Figure 1 (cartoon, rainbow over the protein chains, first blue to last red):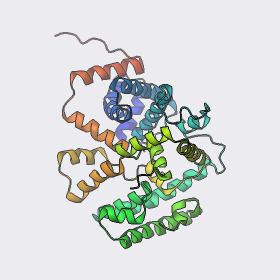
Figure 2 (tube, each protein chain N blue to C red):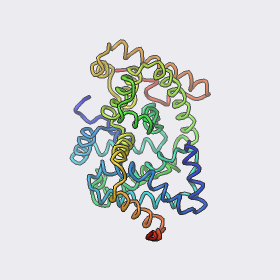
Figure 3 (cartoon, each protein chain N blue to C red):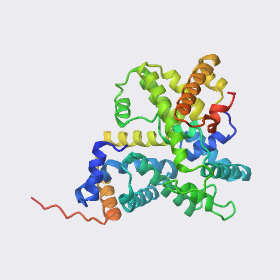
Figure 4 (cartoon, rainbow over the protein chains, first blue to last red):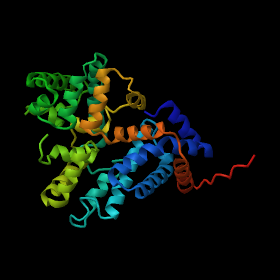
Length: 211
Length: 139
């Protein structure tokens, strides 16, 4: 969800207020430039990509959904423009696979939209929301209790895909503690998904035995 | 942890959660390994077909991403030890590209808005929006 301040800014941009564009650019150009430059390591090229990002945003402004966080939306556009740039200059790893960029283009679609998917995007969104809600509740509970080690354990397991033993070794905790943390999270997420009337087994982490 | 580029690392590559060292390794391996490129293509196909994972949801919904206030306080060194440690972990171990970009931006802001930044913003404004600022009147 866009912040109140961003929502107001979007309204002003849609009303064509020039000052709003100045504020918008001043608010977001720094983080976008840092994001792009981390990949390109070329300041001039990075500025070009950020410029393209702002153009892309301006063109998509009528369709921007304020339920999406503005920063996330801008990073998505920047990511698309960045990959497009890498492809143009021959620096993208899938550049020379077989000359067929269809798959890459699908991946690059900012809206991640229309797929001839086996499961509908609406269904996928429902499943994602259920997982996100249950995880957020769990993570908030741990953060408020100052149990950051448990948050780290889950982030390494799920986000980075590390094995239990590697997580335990890295964080200096027992494998049992890691396994218990994983078990608590899997139980909570699975319950939440079932309560929402959705199948938990579409998520590999909820059906696999931990390594 | 492994030196091998795993499927999970390729997913992180697509979702921008690799440290600088991991990113360099994955890109290098992708350039040299047709098998790995095929694996990446397959992941993209699977995602397009509607496959997802808890990890993907976490990464894409930025569940542990840091707020600008948290990052600002991190730079000021005023977070409590547990939270400070977690912020460092998210940036350095997870390698979240979005939080690193915000951190870099805030670090630059701490130095103040210099003439170069003002010029750059002016260029963005003109080229992206077509808006040309009128010259300021001299007092």
